[in-house]
Length: 344
Ligand code: 13P
View 1 (cartoon, helix red, strand yellow):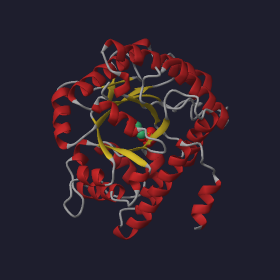
View 2 (spheres, rainbow, N blue to C red):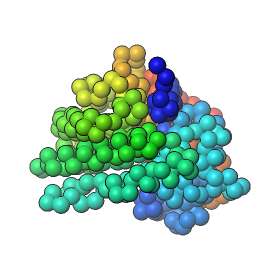
View 3 (cartoon, rainbow, N blue to C red):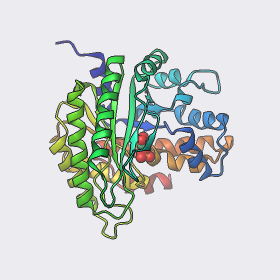
């Protein structure tokens, strides 16, 4: 039985001790991130920032793939090397965000549906020609009074199914990302219930759309109490509930699971991933890894502040978080390692 190239890519994305760097912030989102460190969001600043991330020496040891944004996949390193080539040289697979954002869902106030299916096959073909190996589409589910609605869950699942099929037909591994937002006062029980509902709907839609699960990767949120819920769960409870939901809903054929950080602090995101891997080592059908945006980049962005003189410190900060999360994939992380690195 020959192994399909997309299956090889999907496996490589979740190889032991490796995970994904989400650097696909849209122009609007990166503007907010830059504003937090008082950096103006010009095209050159965005290029320079991504350049420092992608050229960090040794990043490929812990990072299997980077998700790019449409502007970024067309940009080059300071020495003229296209980013796609720079990443490939570091042993990192280039990926691309192909959705065009979460938009208001008609007749469902407060809820969103992700757009981007129009011309998707054509856009995917161009990205493949540019060297992209995988894609990402993020659906957003909000928890609140009477939310999510069945409309929101069904529409987002349908879009994820259509997206995943179009990607596979074009030669890209789809990262399927249904994010249940942390915003709100909801309990961890409610988050678990909504996550189970959403993932069930998503895998039904993937089946209906003839997606080959071995050639796909899931990017879920962790099961966590709402940010404003007075009752916050322990690390063990988050790990137990998250793994329980995945076992109930995610077919064993899926190549791997890479979590988003979703607004958890960088260390908390690492601690949770580590707990899941320590508690369930060798007992799950899929590797559990990371595809963090903020939780990988935050310390780096703070160290950089837009100054060329800070590039080395910013790269060191990124490499440190990448290494910590790599250890968490293997269940070998400990908070002491953070202090040791600070002391070094
Ligand atoms: P966060 O880890 O910051 O949630 O970002 C991951 C991502 O790619 C969201 O789509």
